Image 1 (cartoon, rainbow, N blue to C red):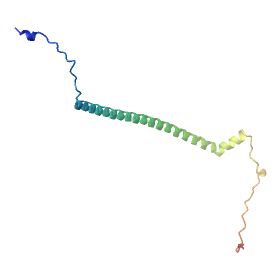
Image 2 (image 1 turned 180 degrees about the vertical axis):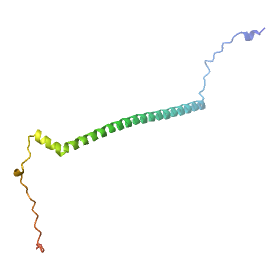
Image 3 (image 1 turned 60 degrees about the vertical axis):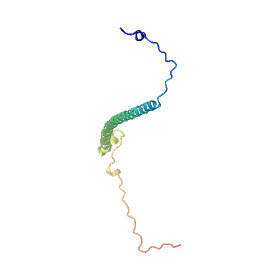
Length: 128
């Protein structure tokens, strides 16, 4: 049988005991919290960089597709321009829509270009 003294539960009150803070433990705790925070910041920065790079990559792809479309449209416009510059098309436009007529041979006047006279062999130049 157990002794009577151990069978009774003793009620010990420790209200008057004040725990002192362990400064070394707190310092270690803040060091680990700072290191973990720094690691989280580095990871967030890395994820942000990758997201920006992927976004830029998709923008570059969209711009390249738009450039291809614009280049194709430019080629079509150059072909249209060459078609509009053709003498046959200009003549058709002038005769059909502007109601112009080709002049007859007797209505045409040919102006000959006059060759300028050669300067004299010895020129007199005024000196100041």
